[in-house]
Image (cartoon, rainbow, N blue to C red; front, side):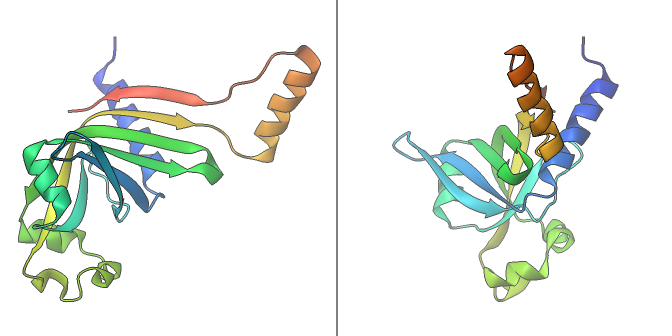
Length: 168
């Protein structure tokens, strides 16, 4: 049985895995039912419950897709650290100026030259419901231990931590 403490620890681990990955892939459902993915930046901001926020143009095609089919997936990869996260939930358009001010980062000016005064600027919130992660030690010591075990015993060493998390 999962306790509230276990759940909180799992979400903390999830947030820790994501915090250093600046770009992710946001997948939505297109009008013909096919899946579409595009790179997005989360600015290393993850809510305590796992929810994510993205700046977007309210009239973008991804927003149209989310309005038609709210199911989304966000995937993160840091191959150099052997970290992978898949987060699924629902998307919604949010036009909350205070939240935009809270999340604004100067680097966003590359996409929004007028900053928060862009006429079509909005937030796309991903209300996370499920996540799964894979985290493996990427250092040479961990790889050496696995290699030595495989050579000496014939058994492979799987040091990967894999966990499914139910959020919200």
